[in-house]
Image (tube, rainbow, N blue to C red; front, side, top):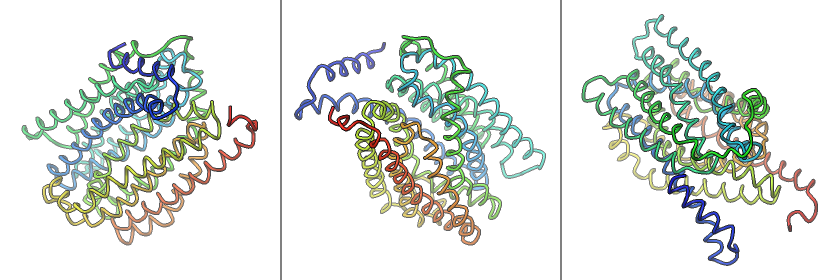
Length: 455
């Protein structure tokens, strides 16, 4: 156990041994979570910061068509990565805090086999798309971008697994160290490629693959010191059955998520060319720091919310829903309150004078991101309840509305219609998540003994 983990353990023992009454008690109780939450944000901030910088510099240094090819290839990778997240990472966060919390080391071994199967499928699908693009003789950088994302995808997914493994024990300190290594490798490599005139969508993805693979090796080498092994872990078949029972709904929800957010990249490139796809990516880049920070916090809160639902039921889940929704919403409002008034200066600074023609859409991006952030609270709690089917229902309703509203708007108005469609989708998604969560909590409250809340 490293010094950071030892410090955290001591803090947790102190909190457990001291009464949680009065200001000092509340402070002691909050301190370990503040420390871990801060480390989780540092971890995700380094990853998102390096990826954000990668996107910004590629937008500056590549022509719009090449940047559009990079964005389109990345949207296809995200579509397949939803399979990985839904069938492996999300169930892993839930079951590590419940069913397998005493056998994390053996559980991770079973997950590695699931990882290999999913990444093999990802390589086949992305490699096939790259082959088709090469055969068609696309001259806009798309074949190289698809080949690059095919090479990078197994390395990136392995890196994700290694980082998430530390969150099973609520130990984000080592994951943050790995994120720092990845950030240094990616940023230094990017400037080296640019100075030597070798930068392209293909080499950018190859750089991501190298950084992810090196960092994953470092993280796995130190993982045995962290994970508990009080009981034998499940076999890969047993783990897969449990993951499938949960993950099939999470996968359906993820696919429903891709439709209203990422379907616009291929649609814009098909209807208006590669450049508008690059413009959309340039807009969405500004939301990445917020998105990645909230994703980091969700990785930390999901196992905790699962334990709270298991131990305290409806009362605990209602409490954490209110707090998480407020946290994510206020965070988004503060972020965009600083960003929107300076939108033209930000675009000049980030893109060197490019994409100024779409800067007027930033307030709409701020609105859709705030709605999306608010939905984080109820979504985390629904997943912690092992009710991903309800998340799917909310996302399905949003996707259906996106197809009905977003497609015609995009076809007629281009990028403006696309962004308006995403705003409508996020509003519907938030309302649906809150309604389904209230119903789920009410049903649980009816089943709990009358004295459960006061015990």
